[in-house]
Image (cartoon, rainbow, N blue to C red; front, side, top):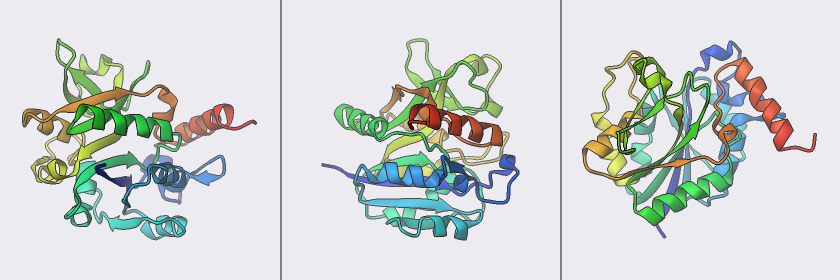
Length: 248
């Protein structure tokens, strides 16, 4: 069986939280969000888990001190693609697939990650991304498809046209990539967008342009891909957790 590596993105400032702690350390039902993501990833028995840290990195290290993870520092937050690039040296000799997760999605389940891995394996894809249907998709990257339904690219909210913003299928920010194909192409990412960042989402378009196969798998439960960028979103995720995942 092909080896599995995991990269968890946890370097962002989280400015919209307007708080004094690192974003992934905010708590859901009393537990820091990053611990949920790491614990879920561990259930897949990956060969290694790499956590990309940056802002308040010592706090994140302390939170994960009892976890078997490696840390990579992203000194400047130049986007998700740039963050993954920082992990390239660790995966230099690695042959297998890389599961990339957002550190602020605490409701993501083991079952969904297994579905992603199985979908990737069974179809011999070079990459798979997890999508969801949101009636109010504001803030999320949109899944742009051709007239025949084929995946074309992902457009971030700030770069999307008015027509693209009407799309309700969103990118969850969770992916599987063939390690060799990913790390051999990350240098081709450009930051010619409104954020001036190197988006990992643009790797999807690069893969497709290069003739590689990219699959999209829809989550069974849209709630599990909710990210936390504001206090309001944190409250929403806490409420969902308590309603569906506890007896309270």
